[in-house]
Length: 152
Image 1: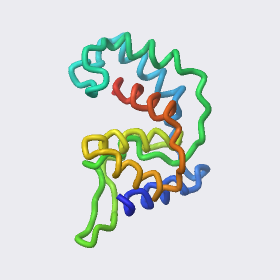
Image 2: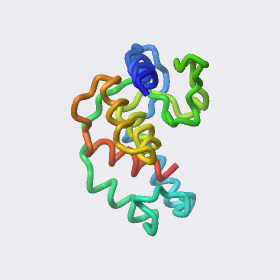
Image 3: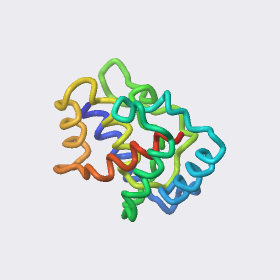
Image 4: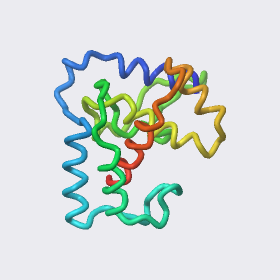
């Protein structure tokens, strides 16, 4: 997890001005609203924390968390364990599935990855944040980005 945290930090350290894609939370909220209105949000696919919720409840919870300040970085957009490529030495050598990449808050990627790690206990999550360089994670931003991810 140390290698993954360092890799993600390196991705987030790329110059934002060189990235032509916008993926900020305001744009993502607009897309989420369109998906909600079109009936495209699959409540059966929600994380365990939101099982039994409706898409409308997710939308209302998102709205209650606004405004939200952003710390823009080059974001992968779906930085989950399934999208990380590692070599036999345990070093991250790349990522796949960059269809949602763009400039967004760093917690967009951190939330998705931290959520993947929850099933393994808190130690891996702590290791991730430490390797990334975060002493105290912003729990509000983690929650917001996980809610937003439910819409896609």
